Image 1 (tube, rainbow, N blue to C red):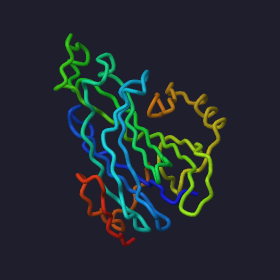
Image 2 (cartoon, helix red, strand yellow; image 1 turned 180 degrees about the vertical axis):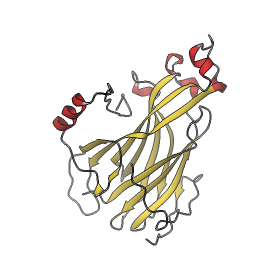
Image 3 (spheres, one colour; image 1 turned 135 degrees about the vertical axis):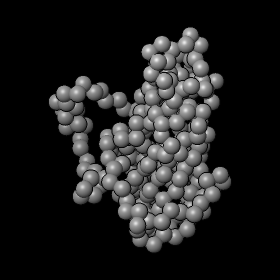
Length: 237
């Protein structure tokens, strides 16, 4: 069982200019005391064809983590556009938020991200040379892909780092955490869909939540988002 669970992510300032920072309000629950800090990363997939073009936009250490529900805003600079192939500047890519404990990733949340001209006229008749200043980034906030990995927590025996669950849609359902579905059921449901949508697994190297936590019960963490390490204050829930 995971000791830390992401319960909600709000995508802030969305849509935004491609040159604006990315901002995510992350809410997570910690079930017991942790010996070490958590590491969060924001990764921008620069190309579906080459994982070497993935860009880690920011990485922060969060801790000490109090038991209970915690919330903070994670802000990162935009990707270096000069490192993205011109043929892939416009179109759909993926932004990943990952969380690791003691260098072992246990969850990643992937969002499809579309980049195009904000103006309908320019979308229909794009200029020959791409004008970066007019490009708009839209993160599809209601279509996250959540992948969880089994890792050893404090006091646990070593276990293989394997995927334990992959889910699309909300982080939580009305009755609590999303129920597990095996791959066969998921594929069967997708075949029955009539909207023509196509599933794409999201990973940092390839094309690989949302009942809100009651804001009256969870106060935002007092953190310095510009520091490499973020100190969390105890929350009263």
